[in-house]
Image (cartoon, rainbow, N blue to C red; front, side, top):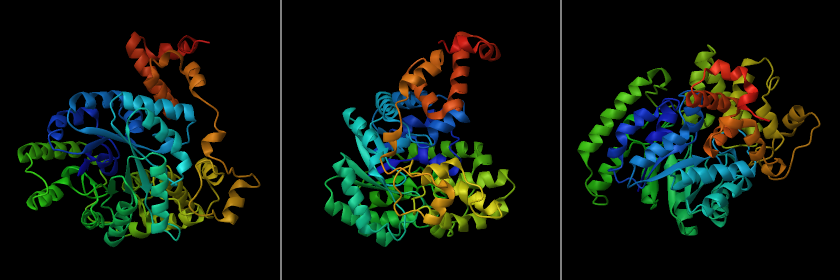
Length: 459
């Protein structure tokens, strides 16, 4: 019934993904006793943040958790052809990443595409199926004139046809209302032969009532977080839902002593990261029109504070839906949330909207991220592309293979395929991390290794 998100989306939404592996390890044995269907512990922003900010190997985190979790399935969030990065990767990189993710201990891979472009899911889903993993196809939920019940029903059917073992309604901004949740879950349950799961965020205040409506519509699974990492921009809390279902006789008694230990542990963990905490003490109703997901909101707050622009938050939240409409109503989830969010900030900062655009916006308009749900505003398209032609094929079809060249470029820094994938996904950030790891392994000074670069990258 329950998928726990504490160790992935819970802290990604509330403390900018800063929870370290060492903070997780003491809780794992007790979490394994909670009877969760699965635990989401990897993917999303955790791969990047582990390397970029925590100086941790994300593959080692996965292995350490797998060693300690004996009874509960482990799952990750995969951004389709974007993997856990912010661009499309060639098919050979996607295949290698999915293979290694399963080999290192994952049971379930939840795969989504920010644009609901099924072409961006094919390679990841086919590879996961070959690796005997459970493949969960996710619908990126949003609202717009084109995102109708029929739209979602049709897309869910495409996911099942591609081999999805279950379907997740991924409501990343907390926009799904209780009546719409009931209708959507009921429709998918009636139309599809696979389990249906719901994932939402409390940002707008709808999620708890939405979950209850989904339960009444016979949803199979709900995503919750342990209470210290629930609410705010995160998921609804596990405890009251379990308590209610237990009182109804649906679920057995839980080990409340173990649950109390987990609550105390994660309360202490969250306090450690107060400087990153979104500190959301009430709901944010403006999300209902800005459509900002939990993780995007917490990171946007941090970025605006760093630029001394927090007073512009209202303007940015009003600009986001304008940008989103002009770009063809993309659901706001990584990477489109970053693409739209950064462009909205630039538009607010600039005297003229779109006088400054990012490379990501240009690539999006060129079709390099996939097919938008609706046509892009033609005037904006002309302004950005300036005569260049957009592609109309699967984005990965225009990408040459990278694995062979990456092996040569990484050289001795990549001790194994997992290291190679850190470099492949994170580029220079990954290279610096691997260099430090290499230095520790051979016992040399990092500055000295930089000086003998050719020795590290043999020709």
